[in-house]
Image 1 (cartoon, rainbow, N blue to C red):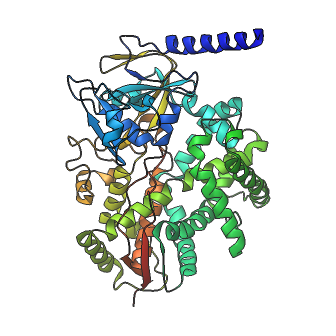
Image 2: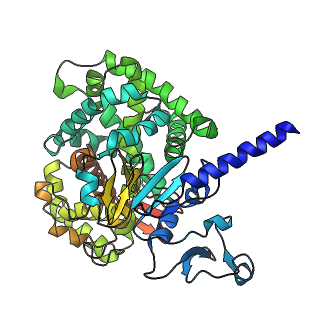
Length: 512
């Protein structure tokens, strides 16, 4: 009995402490939370992060609003009704699982308390400059724990290696070095497209994955990372796909909660132990002959961590490029005028479509800028829900003071829907990119899909090039018929390029 009373008292203290901790400072952003200690709003937020953010940011001026789901669609109503669980449920409202989900709508800057952390979101342009330039924010501290959870790299090793490896990647994958990859990548893409045969039917996302996984991995890591037999290739794809699907959750919570993900992680790390041995054995002395993995081995502090960093590099190279290639193709194929323009551009540079094993150089890609515009427009529309830095000193954004310790989350997804910078923001309009000075590697204003400042994605130019090259070869070789409508983006992921919510079945056959 005494033990039960003691436990009850301890639980009560934890709840009171959590509530007191979460009381809002008048100068800090509004905070979305719950009474549950440590977990906070994690359950509600984790169900559909993009929808949760959309509901929280769209505050109606002068009104107290709440968010709900009506027959599966996000809606709002104001003012807050009195009988939430009575007449509204009878009217057909489907809440997100509990009354906690009836979150007030807070405007473009707000905080979510979840998993023992405070995540403060900035979803409009105010704060963008501070996010990328302020010395009061730190990128390494924001991602260190995620890297530890995802690939088992200890904090000390991460801080020791991050700057060195970032500089190496930025240099090796700069625009001036893309020619070192394009020839090999073109050959690899041809080889793996041949496995699709002359005609067939399938999910476009799967078709893209089956070609790009092995082609890009062989280009960056050297042949031998991807297995060669059909059964082994299938096993590799299944493990990497599982690892990628749950990467976002696994980076934020203990591995024991995700047993299948943990199994795939261990399988991939075991594979990379062999890959690293092969890369070391064949590591040439000439810099120009080295793979990106061999450059990593030359710069890494701590040889025993090579498989871990190899897996991290594999994820970085594949996790966003594959869905971007899917969306680029899906948007092109579903817009007849754009599809026609693409094929006219290809014919003007390469002649009649259908030639076997077309050779495409980096210089050829410069002659067809419209496909690069299509790629960047797909990236704009399906950008990450958030990129992050840690607040190390209090910082002022839009009349709010963000306290030290918060994870500051800038949302490319919502910034790219600002009509001030992107008229008709929800429409796929590749022509808008003619205003960008891409010849000088400059994007459109307020385009932040690759980050900004000194922590932009070091492989961004390679990523754009590989997707362009893939789209050129794929559309030049095959003609497609869409059998489904283009799916919406899934609301389930916050990190990385948005994934499709449903399959997109296509019929394809070689052009004659």
